[in-house]
Image (cartoon, rainbow, N blue to C red; front, side, top):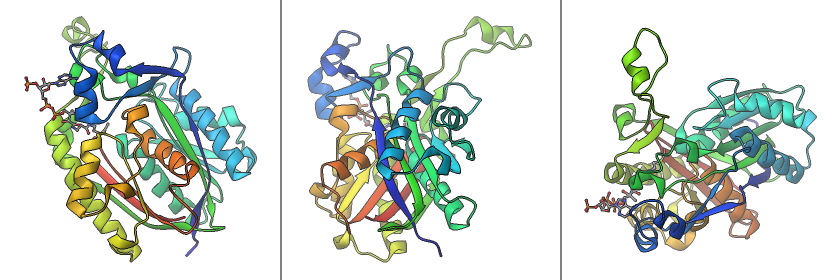
Length: 326
Ligand code: ACO
């Protein structure tokens, strides 16, 4: 079996910072509440001219540079996003044009906050089967467009950003195990609600038209997040044939600092092994793990030879995990 590794990573974070103090002026909330309940201090917001595909493009360029691979060598682009520029064309096709990856094919995947790991696992299979040699995997979100900015339950949690990686045949280290699971019976715990419509056959929907917005059942999601991420870690390390004690670093989806503490406690793993950057960016949906992985490597929290576990859950509901021998 061909071994597949991450050859280079990249990120792009919009420059505008939205702090908890800024949010205090917008809804009935406080820095103290947001910090203590979530761990978030600030998040990034894309500028009006920065679409999801622009964030994806910039992260992709850095990943290509770090992988020392030209865009012409990319034959597959998979973009994870819950906030594409539009339902079509795909963000992947826009990135293909922007970087000049002439011989690539590309498509988007939808798995909300677990999207980066779904995209990574999908692209890995393409390389293992020989359908692709070099894949660009991108997670990009302009999630602030999906938020109802009058709803304090959700507007304090999310931010915009993008992360990317180049996959290819292993040079050193490789992705040793994957785990994906869906819990469709709980789809209604988190959803984007579209109340309006423009069909002339349902004029009553047009009358109540409102831009789509995120609604979630926070407490139920919290429990599900802890249980599904702990379970995904146990299952993926079993597949990778490693023990909990052999995990060097866990890079989880960054939804809430308390979720990460609860996962560590449930698995009896030191929280020091969990990489956390939610304070700086909030929840960037699919982009969270991609950005956290980049920062964990840059800050030497992840070193060559380490056993790294990536783990996520998201709307769907879905969960996912990978083990990467770095
Ligand atoms: N500021 C101040 N008070 C608030 C805020 C706010 N921003 N939001 C809610 N409150 C209030 C509530 O109204 C409630 O008040 P009450 O007691 O008078 O009714 C009180 O704070 C407690 O609310 P809870 O919902 O019980 O707060 P909780 O401790 O559960 O924290 C949170 C809420 C942060 C949303 C938490 O439940 C959570 O993180 N859940 C997981 C969410 C998640 O992971 N979502 C992403 C899914 S991933 C994806 O696919 C994108």
